[in-house]
Image 1: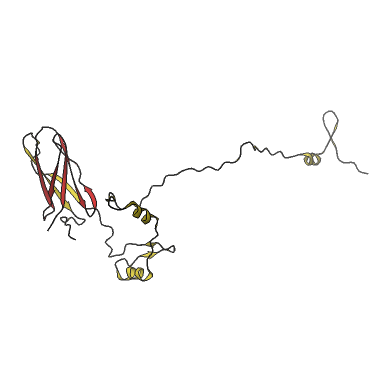
Image 2 (image 1 turned 120 degrees about the horizontal axis):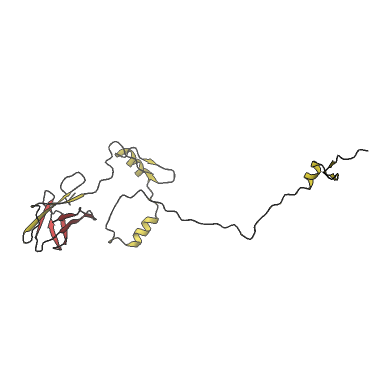
Length: 61
Length: 152
């Protein structure tokens, strides 16, 4: 069963955009390598039923 | 022959009575016609409280359709309304006289669904060191807390 495409934006020391798809449990895992030391702020977003939905921001230090 | 009553002042001069004095009294009304009455229109700010969608994607909807939708009046067929109010959980619905349909929550009414949830958490260690991989988990759930599925 096709699940939900997720986009995770990373801003800060390692800016990039990560893509993933949720599994049958509704979860998706993304990972990236911290090329530069510093603080990153992540926020996931997805389109659910035609509406843009965003998560809360997560700070990784 | 009777004379009219007179009062005298300190010098002995006759003065008209009080009743005569009142007849000579005139009322002065001052009207400032140099300043005409002005009608002023003041703007007020009304804050709507009936928002039910936060950030819908409207980019694909033609603006003309949205305009026509906003200007339109919804009407409902009487039979359809009766079906809704008698054969559905919206049994306590009411209808106002101006044609607008007001839906009240019945005992079995689910009501508006809350927004789906998207939660981002860190699935790795708390450290965020250069050269190491950082993993994060995104969990999408529907209004019941179950995993979100796009086939429903």
